[in-house]
Image (cartoon, rainbow, N blue to C red; front, side):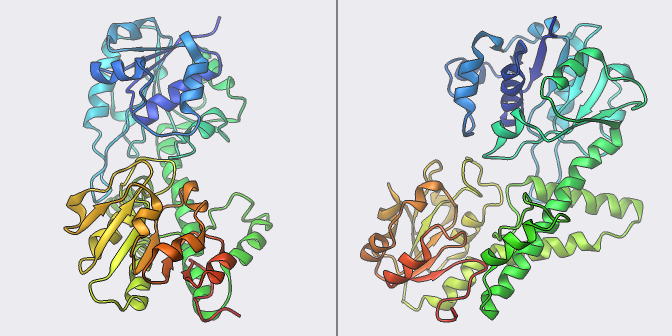
Length: 426
């Protein structure tokens, strides 16, 4: 008989992860103490934007049950504690809410059930909890990626499980849940698992910094990074899934949090981690690439700038450390019009900001347009339509959302990350 699985905390991580476990055929109890949130979930009003989430939960049917009653968790064999952990502007995690939820869950769960902490925590956190006997407490590395969360939750590459003693077999009920996903399972001590997630993100940051640094060289010397990246992905030492698309630094909060954690641990332990400071400097520099391009190319007095996209990336509501928001705040001497398909720009970001109802409306009379988020909608924009609506001709398009040849034919000064700058193409 399959174990019944509970999830405590119905924020982004808990909701998506619970849906994935239910999607693998397990009965899942989804608990949150916020009755208003549970009511919204029961009405199928999801608090997060994730492609495929609505379809997955609807297909789960009665297997996935939402509740605000903590006593409902007593029927579960395995309980994941999975709230999102907030971070501040310095990348420090506030685990107080998680700890309170862990303790509250431990108080109501069946004495024979096991708990799995799924939220990302600083190394050393799980072993010091002291709420359950070691054989009943696990830590599992989450694989959440905004905009791809459902796909990754349903088809993980591997599952990393932190244990008090990795030499002991995993609890059979937890093992049954993990086996339902058909991927390698890597048991290790708590501290190794907690640091494993940070290690993965550090490797991703290294790839991002390499791509960003060399893409900028491409812009200056007439090379094109989009021609180079496929060659790197055919190298077995780098691979087809490497993070090699140039971007505007790192954003979203998770990578920044992990870099800050490494810096703090290195300082406490007396180890050398200067490379992390270099990565952060590079990220801050790259974030303002659109601002530098606009300052160099826009000569109008009191210019009007159109901003397309305010989230830090596509398929998410999150604006955490968003380069678009940073650009809006930095354009102090301009009038702005902004459009995003899911997030309404805030007047608090800029005193002369208006919100447009559609992408082309944000371009009306603009001296320049910056396409700051690679929403699929923006790929449907015709460069000739933009040129007709704009007053100027500068389009800052970091992610090459517009067709380059069509943009040139429309007479746009089309600026793309990692590509030869306008006027320098070979």
